[in-house]
Image (cartoon, rainbow, N blue to C red; front, side, top):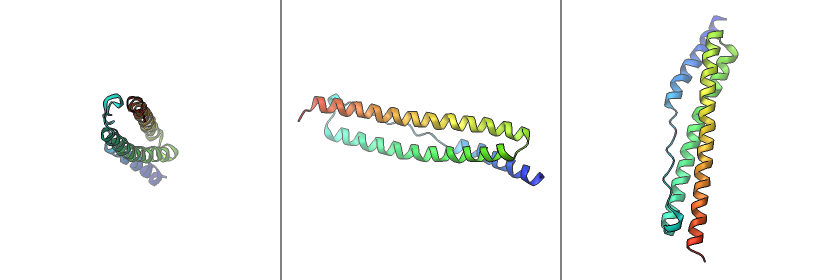
Length: 122
């Protein structure tokens, strides 16, 4: 039984280290659709895709932490479980914030595309 507790503690400790390694990408600065060129908009599209790829990697990092915290919650002592619950909560909040940030960037870029099309009909 002590081995199980040691493994759970090891998983938890490695997840706290991993949490520091998960770095949220910065949202790109999007071009203004109303006064941008097609090249500006294509560059903006590329920045959005790069951001989305980096955000996926960030979320995968957080998913690993959540899984490790789940294991520590299932097999740890009360103290380990409490710490794992806190880590799980923090990682879940960060994950949800990453999803919201990506949705926001996509929405903002779609708004700029509509502005570009309105300023450059046909």
